Structure formats: structure tokens, C-alpha cells
Amino acid sequence: MKNIIGMFVNTLILSNRIKPVEPFTDFFNRLKENTFKVLEYQAIPLESICGQLKIKYPEVFVFFNMVNIGSTQQENLKNLDSYHTEKVQNTKFDIVCYLTDYKNGIEINCHYYKNRFLPGTIEKLMELYQEMLVSISTEPTREVGEYLSSGKKRKLIRSANR
Image 1 (cartoon, one colour):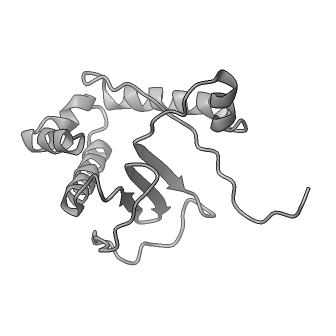
Image 2: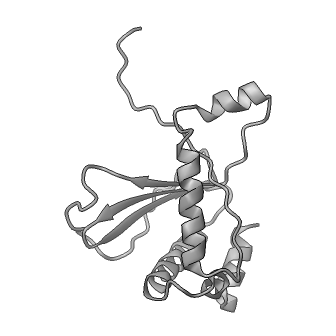
Image 3: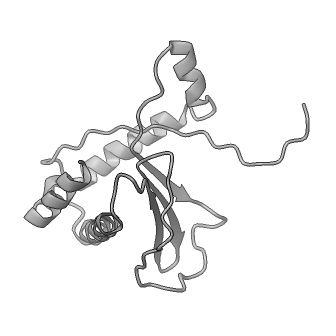
């Protein structure tokens, strides 16, 4: 084997059904259980599984990555305001989010396929995500569907799906 320098990442596909009447805490526990099941197979590349089963690589629209650099209690975020980067780039997936955990918050870097979304749509989607995180953290026992109950949020989600 030759000397190789680089980072090798194996993408894991998580698919979970959302039940609107299910309490968020139950959904979260189910999500956690499913994630641990998938992690049991993390050493096997997804491309290899698809090839052996002779199936098409699954369509993945949203790529979500929690960046764990060192300890989970990193230094504080420097800028707590949300911002929008003017540099828009194309991605392999429709939306790619990288989350980094800090002592005083979570930084979200969102990239998106610029031919599919307008910058304003992604900005609104990130605002909705932030509102949902706040709602979930303050009232985690509400039904999942209640976090999406306002007409404004439903309209945004429908427009993002087009």
C-alpha cells in the first residue's frame, strides 16, 4: 500500500418517518435508536453495499453533518448573529449543513444547490430551523407536528420542496 494522506468519509443514510402526533421526545429516542443501528455498519462503504446488491445509490437531498473537532465543549462562538454568505456554491446534494458545537451555541454552515434555491429561501429555512431548535429545547414534550403548525412555516416547507 502506498502512503496516503487525506480524510476518508463514509456517508451513512438515515431515513426516519415523522409522525406528527408523536411527542418529540419519543421521536428523538426513535431517531437515536435508528442512528445507533446504522452506526453498527459504518465500516462498510455505502457504495459497496449498493454495488453488491445491484441497486442505485439512494437519492439524498439533505446532507447533515455534525462536525466534532476535539472536545464537544469548544471555545465560544465569536459572532452570535446569523449571517448570510454571498458566495453561493453548488453542492453534491440539494442542501448541505455542517453543525459545529460550541460552549455557547451551535454554528450552522449551510450550502445549497444554487440552481434549485434562492438565497432568501435558504435564509428563511435556516431561520425556521433556529426557531424549531429553540421551541424544541424549551418544550421538548410537544407533538412533532406542533412545531410546524403555523401557516407561515407550512408554506415555507412546501415552497422548499418544489
